Image 1: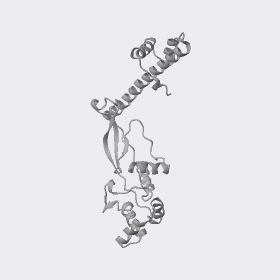
Image 2: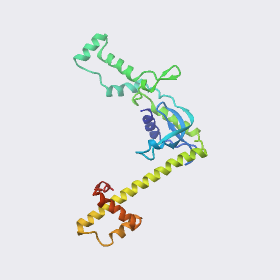
Image 3: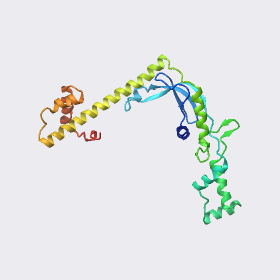
Image 4: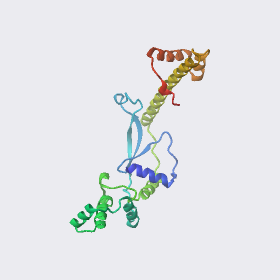
Length: 246
């Protein structure tokens, strides 16, 4: 949730970093859920973890980049109207019975519970509380302040350049992504050609004259490749209608 709220607030800020933008051979800035930051690059997962997702990658941490503070509480004059609109004061016999038991009015008891749930301290002394112990609802936390802190960091820190080893890591991921995209595109193209062949048979009773030549030219593949793709369908008896979504 912390990364999502920071991203939302930073986007609303409309900030453009003062330093030059990241190029293809510089590190990526990761913001973790604790709002600590790291410079990193991508690296392929070991082969045994890429059987289903060939381009699966992990993050290779290059260096720690610092840490953002938890967002401060908004002024209570802003918090309570929004909070009570979200969670109105309860009514009814149960609410009255609980209030009597605690010796408070219904509204006092409700505010006490909301305060405990939403307005707890984010720090113990100078140390951050665990993110699971802090409520980060933007109704109560000023994420705009944290977004400005993040913008200041970007304005004053240039991403480190990747070393030769790290460039190999990053380029390896790019290569497998492109190869996977090419495999998927070829599978899609084969399915579309089989759909076109079936449509030709339904319309004309047979494959129209010049069909395979057109498929080869339009698809940018050889005639033997077209023959193999169309044969795969007749041999397997499959239905490639799922490819007909483009």
